[in-house]
Length: 452
Image (tube, rainbow, N blue to C red; front, side, top):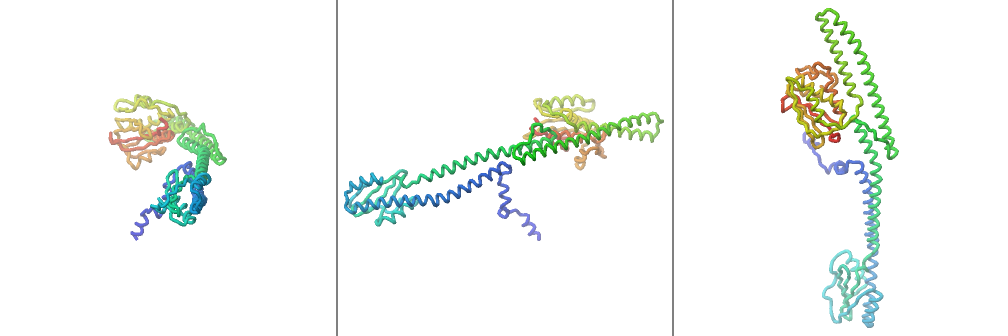
């Protein structure tokens, strides 16, 4: 039984030919469309080549070889009959395009063919059918030389190789190849124009998924592609309207709750203090902090235009604001990085991350690097860090750690949620790691280079 399972796990390419073919085939729609176009053209060329070259060309070469053999047989009959050789030679040159020379009492040094190729074989078959005596055939790039044994001696026949050449063969090759290439180019251009709207739709959907706007997108192309584009626009508007309505409703409720909570705090402040009253006051303060945090979260999820800005200036400004006694921020960032950002949202993201570090650390290092495919912002601190099991949970809204390090102590658990939403809206990713440099928490933010 274990051997059977081991055999099932082994992968043999010859047992899965279709999977092997899938790996070789291109992944893009344009590449696969070209294969769909090229395959019939190649098959047509193969079928045409077989029919033409194997049938038509063979028939033409056989007829030409029979004509040459017949002309030579006629010349031999005239010579052996005793006709004047000079007269026969003149007639052969004028009417048959044959150049003759006769060498009396001289035999053939070689017989047969100079080479064994397909073109020699056609001429050999025709000469064997027409001639009775031995012969020798040799060809070069311009002429065909045939030596024959006759009763008058050795007859040398020279004729142009063009007589064994069909003009239809290169013409068919040129026309079929040229027309195939022309059809391929025209079809490729049409296919590219049909695929371009699909690519633009995919780019618009990706941009919208990253929080960007697709203001320049409009449905185009074939009917089905236009329908998909219109469906995307309707879906985008519905999602934006639904998100806006929910945020407006929740923000309105949170805003309306601020008044009764403020009134409650005033009333509690006028009552004589005791332990129960202090606990009640603390609960009201927490509720008010939750409302303020949610309002900040809702504002961060709203619409904001992106604009080009200098990343060093933004980080330097935040550094100057948060640097204080007992807490230092070291910044290592190139000064020439200009990036398209939603300034308010990304500023709030970085501020939340650094405020979290400030509560539990004394030293923070910010480093910025341009990698091969993305821009990386690393924030290291010397605090207690976050357990691996909790690193994904802390991104949930209103989630608070129960361990020694509570990232939102004095808050409501929305700081990292706002930070992650801000990064995702820019098409990036955010990760929490252990800081090998300072021993605390390491926050990695990666933004696509398209934003730089």
